[in-house]
View 1: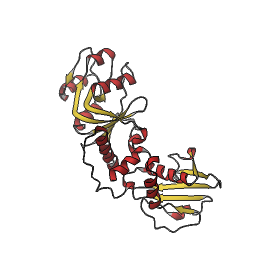
View 2: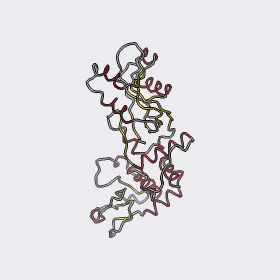
View 3: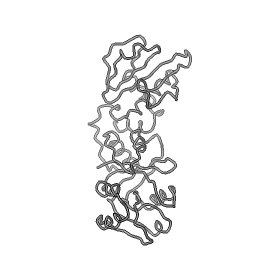
View 4: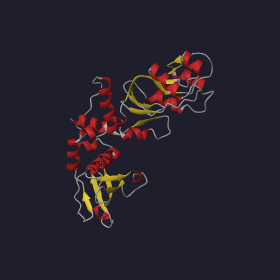
Length: 294
């Protein structure tokens, strides 16, 4: 099975919200590229649709992507205009499907797949890798990140109340193999806050290459930098030895580097103990991943 992300970005006059509600009501997700006219058209014959639509549109690549790849048993993430996330279980492959409602109200959804759509109530239950997928402009794309796929399976089992997918825990020897980069940074962020280090929000920018964020201690007013590495990536301690301020380093692979006076390593055990003792403080996606391993 595959895991996808789809944007619902209609071109019709009905608007985004009405189009999304139409998808929820009819248990479909999909795209536009409609054949003009007032007739209701329904077909599962790709060649029939392509023959008519190719006379109108120069490219039908995105529709063909759905027709070729999205299949029964796949999972698809989407979100509504307000930023609420949903996870859908695909129950059929591509079809061209319109209704009297979509024709009358100019609802721009026609190339669809049928699915069971469930709301993901908590925003923090959506992993960072999935949220990042929505930044890309493509209408639909697959995610191949193994941890994101495993988590999506686990979450669907929870949302549906059924053990639809078997999630193999043998691939993940510890929680850091399931956490994405931003989630690991978040855990370290929260851990340091319990030590009275406050993060300067503006310092957490994607273009900051040498550190993840900048800290100020609540009482001593010391300054510090933080660098985090995941998925087996390692840090070179000497690179930070000439920093005037304190530096905190964390990597999900245990470090063997020499220490320097201004550099403090945060061990995996410290972070694991923090997560175990403060599970209720963690974002729901991280709580779910801990549950998955358990």
